[in-house]
Length: 148
Image 1 (cartoon, rainbow, N blue to C red):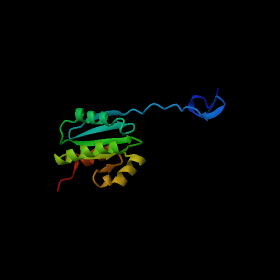
Image 2: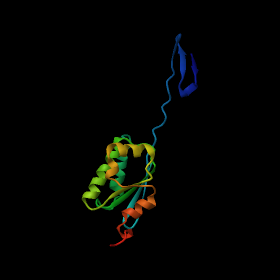
Image 3: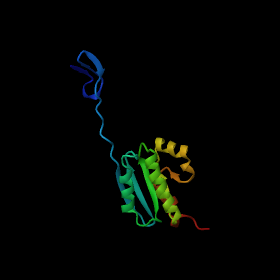
Image 4: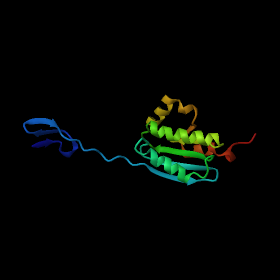
């Protein structure tokens, strides 16, 4: 038996036949979550891919760190290169609950692939997106808004 390309995949010669070598499956990317409670807003920092493999982790984390269901949240998505419909679903459920109870959800630093998902699904019309966390926090904080 011989193997071209070693453990990374390629071709193997076994029993007189050339066959694709068994590819090595890369480890599943993990989701890292952190938060910072500010006086009027909580910033949720998400790192990694938001998908079906970690949906429950994200939902559980949001239940633990939210001070109230009506709280205003800023999701820092600058380190989220990919999001599928499961990640989108978590954000939409959270936003719907917050809005219904008087809070809001803002997104910051959205990367190209998640941004495209938001455009295709029409989410951009319902969730404010900002270039930076600082801009999102300023927009989400009622006391920072000019009075009329």
